[in-house]
Image 1 (cartoon, rainbow, N blue to C red):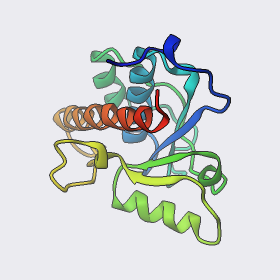
Image 2 (image 1 turned 90 degrees about the horizontal axis):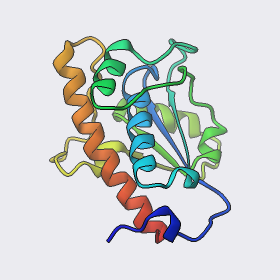
Image 3 (image 1 turned 180 degrees about the vertical axis):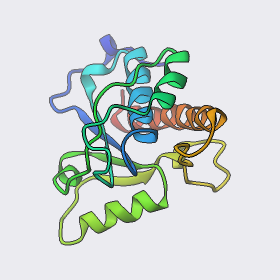
Length: 172
């Protein structure tokens, strides 16, 4: 049986999760929105601080990609926020840095050189039961509408299991 928020003892610090992709306009804001949605459905909003960022600053200040936002909206999820680049301090502030692909992982690792990151750095698809060893969430930016649908499916499956893992780890 899942514990509801009212059954969970108070916690002083929220679990901090940041999702990371290349430009922070497609995959990472989608993962942020999906994860927020799932957290809210379980009544755990006050237990989390959720954000997203990009390895690059190319799109800094831009809203989520309209195609990604449209697919999410069709599934009842609103994408909000503005693109921002990941900063070195994020690696010390967040508990989980969740990357979308190997290029993002390499960018996070470069950023961590000379730092003492306290965050766990993991692929989102490590939590995807259908990953079959394929850990990259493909970038749908240059593809058609079906690519955004495919990515949404991956992100939803992965975020559900990521949330399960965090809830289990914290004994909620």
